[in-house]
Length: 333
Image (cartoon, rainbow, N blue to C red; front, side, top):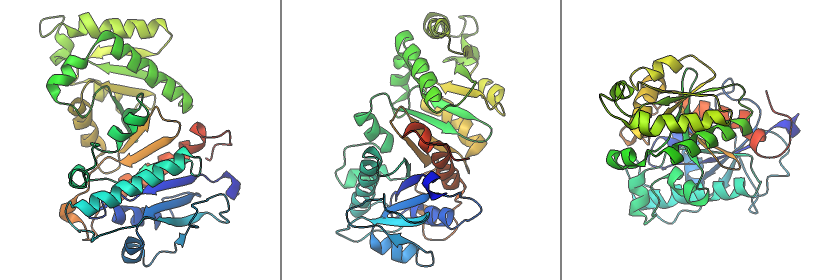
């Protein structure tokens, strides 16, 4: 049955954070993960120090994955030039995490793997290494301008209309045409995933969704026209709803997807609900990219106490949807 198993590439994240630990814990959990080829992109020193008690095979130097004989755990070596700094950001940490991400991304773009899972990076480490991108999603949007940030958990799913920009700029970005385009693209991406019937719920911008214009007019002048345009195209979209209740409306509804208009509007609710097991999934790519929704947690790195639940769910979501975006293939259950 290995011909039905997807190939999941896993970038290391910042080697000084908890990325290596949660990857190792996740891949050591036989009950948590189903059949697949899991390829970790990491320096050999990290593999020896972190994965020393796990059966892991090095893939060929040419990086080819077509000749894998059995499912399981593999690693693609990433060269390091200096000392990896544990427990905090550093220039070498930034270089290693960036090279790991770039190689894993190249492999999924070339079809050598079927989905990409990224462990948390440190934006500070990337900056110290002279890398101009403000994280994975920023880099992916450079290649794929329609990439969008979504968050998935058992009880709640959220899509962010804007994310890593100041709140003042996020408010200015709420325009009828751009919001309509976002709703349409979200609906198309969910179609590509074969998500099934859905309800897209749009959060209002102002308290109480403007209270009929008493607390702001954007809901009537900008947001509602975008919703009406999407409905005319047959998209199942509703709102705008008061931001303080829309997430409660969606909680537990498998069909519901809340659109948060700015980063914290969506993420405060999502992380309150699913901080330990939530998944960040980038849609709008020719492949699925997932990631834990937590950061590097430098303060607990190396202590063995990191919770792998979010990484486990990231790997499982990538495995479940990998073939739906890549090549025609039976979907693994």
